[in-house]
Structure formats: C-alpha cells, structure tokens
Amino acid sequence: MNQTNNPPGMTATVRLTVNGEVHSIVVEPRMTLLDALRDEMALTGTKKACDRGECGACTVLVDGRRILSCMSLAAMQAGKHITTIEGLERNGQLHPLQSAFIDHDGFQCGFCTSGQIMSAVAVIEEAKAGWPSAATADVSHPFAFADLSKAEIRERMSGNICRCSCYPNIVDAIAEACGRV
Image 1 (cartoon, rainbow, N blue to C red):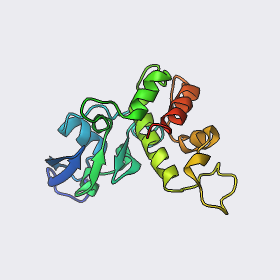
Image 2 (image 1 turned 90 degrees about the horizontal axis):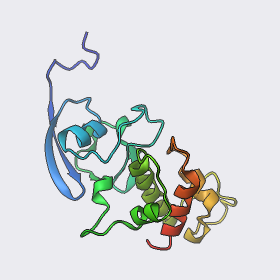
Image 3 (image 1 turned 135 degrees about the horizontal axis):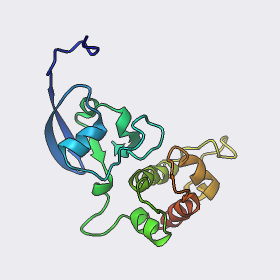
Image 4 (image 1 turned 90 degrees about the vertical axis):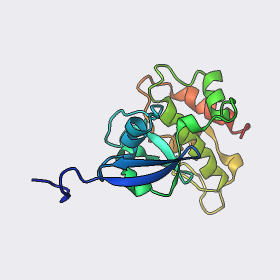
C-alpha cells in the first residue's frame, strides 16, 4: 500500500535557490531537503547523521533561519533562499565563524562541524535581532547583542550535538566570531 497516496513514480520539479544559485531539480514529493542537497546537487557539506532531527548535523539556513534539513521536504522549500556550509565563504575568504572554528580548534572528527557553524551563524543573527533565549536572565528588557554571553551561546547551540565533546572550543569560537561579524 502506498502510504503517501501518490501513484508510484510521481515526481515534482522544484526550483531551489541554494547559495545564490537557482537549481531546478526533479524530486519525489517525500524527498528531504537534506537528500536533495546531497544527492541531487552534490552539496555534501551538509551531513546526514541521525536522520531524525536530533543532532543538528544537517542544519542549513532557509531565508536566514536555521532548520534541520533532514526534517524538511525539498518541495516545501521552493522559492526560498537556502544557504549551506558551502555558501558561507566569499571570494575565497572563509566566513568569520569558519575561521574562528579553525583558530579555536572547534572540531575534532569534523562530522558535526558544518551543522555547528550553520547554527552559530543563526545564533549570531538571532542575537543581533534581539531574540532572547531560555538562558536570558531578564526578558522584560530587549535582548542586546552585547548580552550574548557564553551561557547564552551554550543554550542557543544546545540542539547541535558533538560526539567528540568539543563544546568549550565551539563556544569559544562563536564568542570570538561575534567580534568579527
């Protein structure tokens, strides 16, 4: 029995803007964004780890907001702007967070690194926008970017798991990159 109620072999053409480049791809309606990025566009920087939305390794930005690409259908992202780890560098220059991860040894095996960096990009933008977190001491006042402490960073990054336990270096890298972005 076909659980999706779609005839076998049904496909859809989806236009995705990934890292500033428009891609038209043919996907099965239930294909995840993660699989579309990796298998259809050969953008393998986004990692497939748990495939259940629990680890954050597949984090990408969609219209500037972080999402777990393993939990989102490619067809749902039509017309949106997607940024992957491959899209962060500009003109051969690493993004400040990429450089900070290198400077602070924010990775060991490297498997979670792309998801960590993509989440960190979002953390900084969320803080700049004044979004509080569960670690924000006083939500009765607007959150200021200057209030992005290491405790705030740890809380905001809590959805990204590092099996090597490189968390102190990751937090240090993000804290330092705040001064570069």
